[in-house]
Length: 147
Image (cartoon, rainbow, N blue to C red; front, side):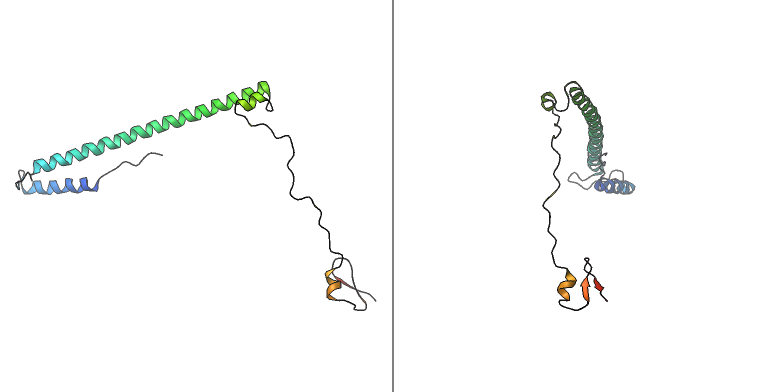
């Protein structure tokens, strides 16, 4: 992403202001080195510095772009080198690990807690309706009428 170039509102105001002052007089002078020539010199100094700064930003942006391209190239080359080691020696070899590869895991992953949970022996319906004649449960907690 390119860096934003800088502009200066102070410079913009000064440029407009000197134009207005020139319309009053080309040789406007107030003493103590307050004159249009000195004002213009300071405006030009800031313009040159700002222009130089923006040029440097462009140069930095170009350098960053070149670095990113070189990084992509090196990343690709590194991957090819590692794959070549894997092809020659295998992905489980000591040489592959020495080259920066990660060995394959030999054991399978365990799945959570394998302990069986025991189901309660009494059903909810039986607890809620104790000792009612002609009412039993059918195993899923629902009442079944017995005739």
